[in-house]
Every structure is written in structure tokens, then in C-alpha cells.
Length: 332
Image (cartoon, rainbow, N blue to C red; front, top):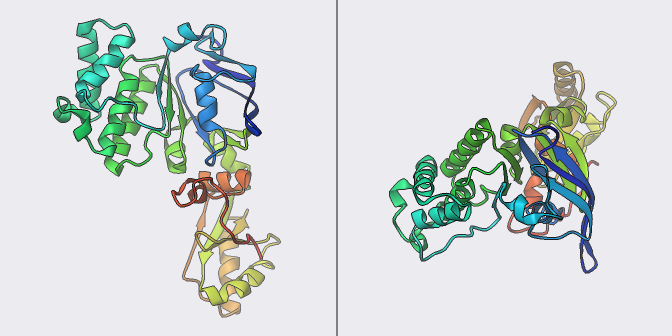
């Protein structure tokens, strides 16, 4: 189709005094994976619920596959698939029956629903467990089954809300491969995730959402480039940290920062290896021996931290469910 396949304009949604979406606008073209990043409570799931017609916004507009999702939600649903944060599968049906049921809801004939069910179960490595009741499945198997069910109708647009949370690494890679295969066959995917390597690996474009607003958008590389090049990253013993921060502050005109959760000190290194050499010399002159030191280019973790003020681990860990930053100062 011509033009964007998903478009949201000035979406606002409030729940009581909480403004979950605060004028979000975004759009992207067909045939890509669009990664939506943000800490818990940022508005990712609320936006997906609006775009998939499960929630009506207070104001704004949304189109999916060229269809006004607010004016004609019934038609819009025939063009989209959804795997939410929690596996929506029936414990008393078998895996095969769950997926076939979704296929029939997509108006597939019985034979076609069965054929596509076998195909997705095979690709997601659940064919051997297909005829077992879902209540016997592990959590990871249930998640994979839910993702498989969302794909059986081969929707034009597939919404995946943190599809790999809580599953084992092998299953995670299986889902990555299946999503990439679907995109190569013409499906467009909107993927929310807090695994930033996942977005870096899969997404052609990335949006960063926080406090209900889209605060950054672009390709993963363009977002990294906004951070100004490479950084020197190092760790030192706790009793050397203050002296290390003071030493690095006079190396190249940039201020070092300290991240309490990882205990890593970083210093911008616009001149790359030359800055690394400066750091090594400065530390040697101050008789400071780092436990570890490296030069690296920015990652999406750095993008996340720069735009939201939080590291992704702080936003995502079960012990910190609201995504608030842990106590501790950045910098000196």
C-alpha cells in the first residue's frame, strides 16, 4: 500500500489523574519491524490497545492498513494480529486447537486453518506438543503458542507486546526468526520490548516513549549517532571511584558519568582510540588501575538512558516494577 501502514495522530488517553498517552503521534511504512521502547508505565501497551481497537482514546486518530481504526474497528481487526503481554490461551484446549480456533476466527476454512496451524507450530518448535492440553505447557511454551496464534491469520500488521519476556534464550531466538520470516513475506510488525538488543537486532525504526510522549524516533543507528560517538567505559574498585571521576574530568573536556546499577564509569570519546589512550595515560599517572576498560560505540542502552534518564535494567526488573530509577547519583 502507498503511505504509512500504521499512523497515530495526537493520541491522548487518561485513566483518572494518570495521563497514559499525552499526544502521541507516529507513523511507519509497510514491511518493517518498528520497535517501541520505554520503561514500565511509559504508555507502550496503552498505545497498542488503542491501535488494535481494544481501547478508545480520549482524543486523536489512528489508522491501521489504511483503515480508520476508531471509525471502523471491525474492518481494522481483520487486518491485524496481536500477542499481548500475557499469553491468552485456553488451558483446556490443546495447542493445536488453540491455534486452529484463532485461524477460524480469521475466517479461514477448516483445511486452511489446519494447514497454517501445523506450519506455525512447526516453525515455533511446538509441533511435538501440539496435541497436549495447554495446561501441561511451561510458561515459555505458552508464550510461544500465543505468538504462534497471533500469526496464523497472516495479518498485514502484527502487534507484539513484549513477546519474549520470561522465555528461554532458545525460544527467544525462534520468535526472532519467525518474526523476520513474516516480515520478509510482507507482514509489518510493531514490537514493544525492554530488551534493547532485541530492538537493535530486529527493528528498522525505533521510537522511545516515556511518560506518555514519544521523545525520540529514528533508525537505531541514527539514534546512537545523536549521542556523539564512542565512549570509554571502565570499572574501578569502590574506594577509587571518586579519584577516578576527578582524574577523568580533566582528560578531554568532557565530564564522566557513573551508573550505580552497573558500577560503570563512562567518558565521551569523540576521537575514539585517541581518547582511550588519553584515559589510560591519565589513570596511570594517578596510579589508578581499572578492573576493566574498553572503547565502545553507543548502544540502544545508551539511547534509552540518555532519553529517559533510566537504564533499561532499572526499567524492566521485577524488583523495580514501576521503572523508577534506583537511588544513586550519576556523575560526580
